[in-house]
Length: 156
Image (cartoon, rainbow, N blue to C red; front, side, top):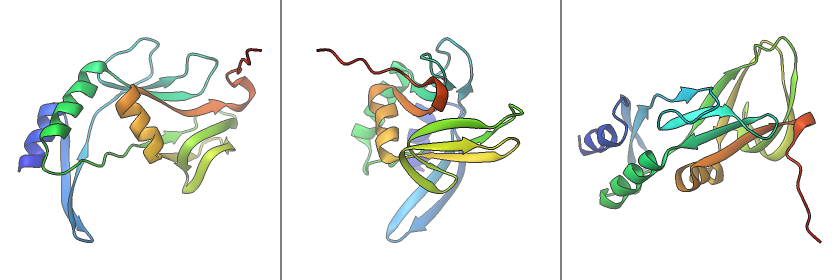
């Protein structure tokens, strides 16, 4: 009951799914609505195209980061958030990407090329590093388009 209350204070539209035990730990699963698409920040959690030439990022507002930090400090146990994204490639063509620190279709990809097949559903489960980046820094890169990757500048 305490977890349900804490989650609903942070994520107003959160939907409780279930409680369960994993080994010796009790866990609770919630679904949290997010904004998908757009070019400007809207809502607390948003999945959108990367602004540097393609790809996908997840971003979190300062407001939600602060609410999560307050709730985490007052919690009896440390929350273990996870982020899973189901994506249907409806572009009518394959998309070659470079995945960043994700499990993609059950393959662990720290930084790897991958092809999103036409008409196929793909599952991205962000790694702990990517989830931490989203919650702590407000953004995490999920993938880049292979042929449109961000250019790295080397200063001499």
